Length: 380
Image (tube, rainbow, N blue to C red; front, side, top):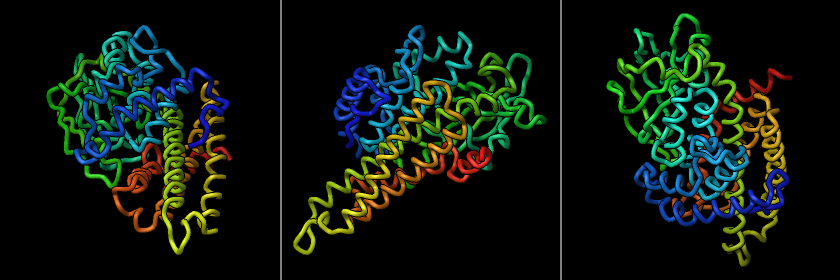
């Protein structure tokens, strides 16, 4: 692991915070990783423990129960989580959902949900993807049609992180199906609403402990006050929030790549072959040297992007480029580190196997690498 205290975007307070986060994960996360992987879900007790430790939604203002901290604290929580080898959905709640409610929620919505999200009493999700639509959010088919003082929500969503646990879901829906992207709104749907159903906890290649679900909405009635922000402004809200989501994924990817590299170094220095350690072979050392150089550049770029975001200057294209670069780097490092493990790398008892499996989807969710290239290409 690199010396995090030397990173210019962080200060002494953040370094102390990182140390606290790392110790918390060592105590509450690492001993449970294998069990959660087997069960396919992370227990609510972990969410409550995170809330008690101040690791949920650190950016929420103090008047709603949060700490009112900047995104650097989110980054520390995400980096240490993914370095620890976990993909728990706490980052989705902290980095994505919380900001939607803080930025677009009514006073009533903020006071109802934010304190519970900070404490871990409420678990949240955002439902964008549908069986027939992925990155093309304007093509969603879920509807929320006005009926008096209520919306009637119909449709289905898929690949929804935190879907099995979620108490509240931000649903991307068409309130006016005739208006395309201009007819999209964000609707808060409580899991207790009649007509809402959870589907199966999806069987994924990786990220086994992070519950990912199908969600179904059949004539779900919610009051019009459950609209998050202005009706018809949902697509604009999504586009505004996507840079932070993609920056968060970039931070996760960089930390996971670093962990994979560290596992590769550790294994090759311990394993012997032909009378010497695997590390002593020039091919191994050159492979690791090349990866180390790319990781060094990656950390510098990540800090640049975080600094840009703190200044409110990180553009959609820059955030997309960050997600593209860091998730592709994550895959490159994880795959190379697994190769350096030889046959052992294919065994689930070694951390590199989980890191490799979990890395694959990073280049898909939050916008595929191909879509990220398209966003960046538009600025050339």
